[in-house]
Length: 245
Image 1 (cartoon, rainbow, N blue to C red):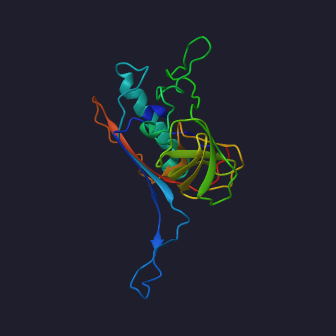
Image 2: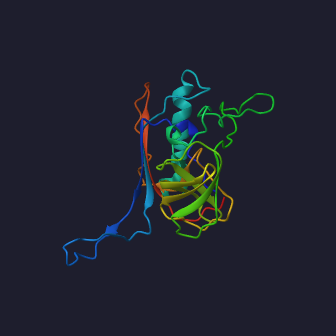
């Protein structure tokens, strides 16, 4: 299974998540109207994260703030191997989650052990808070019925992920929401489902993520200014190799 891009490195100043694809036209009609059709199967995700701070994180002080985070970047770069190996990339999208009213955006993060301690890197367990499940849907579907057990209001534009049995983590973005009652709705989304899903499949809204690879062999290049704070940027594109969970 692919590793996940570390939370300690999700410290970008800017990010850009977009569906890339190809639209083609068969030509103009008799009324001089050119129609467009998708020729890419629904597109694929790209992700750019710019100016990622390499100057620390929780649990680090002094010189370790720069050293540990920079070494982590280097290690992840080697694991990605110029784009040969896939990596699971989370979408740093907390502001836009359908978060239940009255809860902190960090309610499901850093849950401690039973004795109150955290792991050695000062992080804890993650536990999803938003609870939304999907009805059965076929490969390439762009509409599903959902059951809303615990969540805020969906209005369209929210990102969610599904961990598919064969294709692994895949990301989708909602276009429209049609509520049938307080705890059920039909949503449309893009891209089309990468794999069929069974009734009761969980939709991951807390931490959407996607299986990706480096956009280019040099996408994790690192330029260091010694004895000062540093930052780096990275580009990813969705990969379509299978990655069973």
